[in-house]
Image (tube, rainbow, N blue to C red; front, side):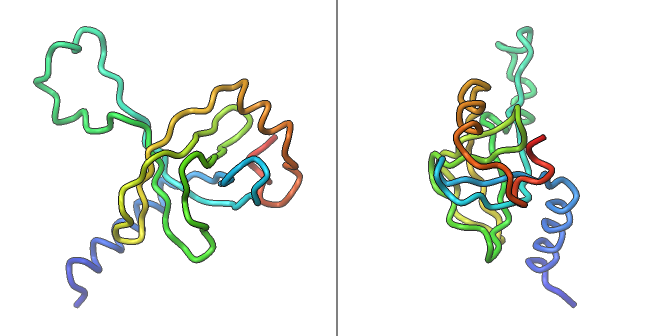
Length: 136
């Protein structure tokens, strides 16, 4: 029988597979695109009427946007200020990360503005197979 760590690792893999989103990872504008499947966790926004009420504070754990990478052999080292592009209108820039745990890496991200994303995509070749289904 598998130990609890193996059971937890298998359950995390199931969750990641269920909620993964295809994206392209770029270390910089001139970098080589890498196709990745990641989970995106968007920060929860408290309604204005709850701004001073912290009775539900325990449910507000996601204070920043973050992306969870599954560390595999084909994924390069995740660095600060890299791009994770989900499409023509959605991309994130990576920031600080937590140490790898159970083969998953949690990275805080910030949204890339539409103007910056449009300029980035105009300067790179998006015709390769890594971009298929990402850029329309």
